[in-house]
Length: 219
Length: 100
Image 1 (cartoon, each protein chain N blue to C red):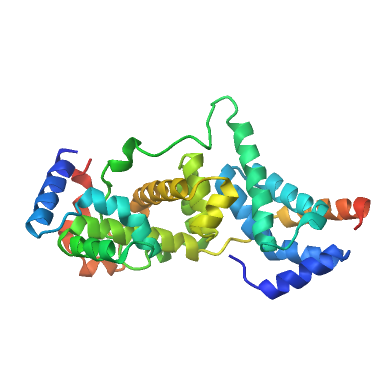
Image 2 (cartoon, rainbow over the protein chains, first blue to last red):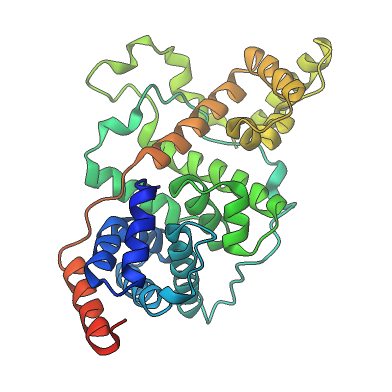
């Protein structure tokens, strides 16, 4: 989450007083976060750009209504999440997907698959843009009601309570969805991050060979 | 799945033998709260004991922890070309029309 909290308060006050420059500074401070949030929720670059624009335009229009009870960034995220969810619903209008569908029960009790060791900092094997594509692709493979929770909690680092409030969900619902999302992502990312014999840099040398194939027999 | 069931049964037996009640399914259910550091201390201790003797659960917890760390430590990329320019143009139009 972006820092510069004092800076944020000052900039918001100046923007409310009419400073377009102050608002532009806020935009530049947060636009990458809001774009990533929108891309992670919608899964479409065009939609993400629309959400980015709509969120900042609405924030500017409604700046007088921002009461300062929360951080400006949290308020901005709330606007962006609502815009992103609307985009998502439009895309899925023919498929009747509810973001509020109950997810408790179901395969909550199934055991994880793809159980293999990853080694330390497995993400460092990838270039930045490649890693970003892998991470975004994995999040987009989650059902919407899981990925919205995961994105707010584990990508944007809001607390469980804040995530519940932002999405209008109960805390237990957030916890349940977060658990499922984390387990699914772990499983999806395993093929990229597992420590395997194919690595040429020798980082697998400390690994027991038997662990390399643990996942193949599960499931 | 047969192997998974077998492993689960073996772990559950082992847990009972050791006087513990938390089996693999229990670990998975508590995993998220454990990684959040929000688990009841007694339960967290029980979970840690399970991890000491169950390699599968140890790996699941470790890779889940790394999954979360990778996401939360990854800074957002620069915006794709043209996105910031179009955003600022749209804002400039809005500000020009509306003012404050």
